[in-house]
Image (cartoon, rainbow, N blue to C red; front, side, top):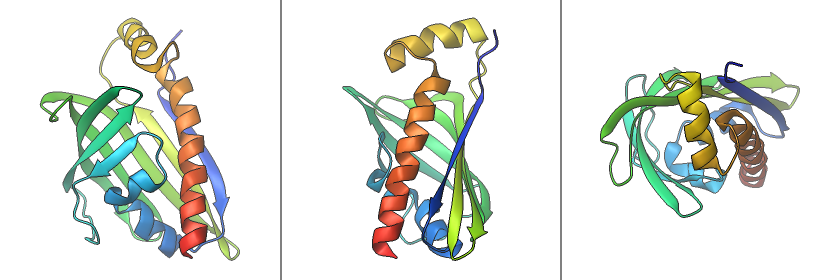
Length: 165
């Protein structure tokens, strides 16, 4: 059976699309709501552009790693996306596409519907991905694992957005 390559979830947030976009377009703030991200190098407060790169730091249990990400979508108040292109334990030196992340924001009355999508971009055959997935996620596929991570990220984003207004 082929692996699931795309997982999405959405949440309703009592904040404007513009306020939410300012949050999601600043990867340095992701540790405020992400269960894995511990930081990013894109300068805080800067306005990202398609093609900009940043290094994200991540942690899952005892495992720590970094990814070099490239901004792929920028539409203020509507969309922000990036692709993790390189990976490594200390620095992102292994050139391999990993995953794409995309935030979509849609006005919903005085609030916003936020959709977060993860797309598996690993070029590996499904059988190789299945073995790697179970090792690095503790027995799950990445799709199963990311479904939980996305839900936790969205709940955290809502908490941050509604607290900061």
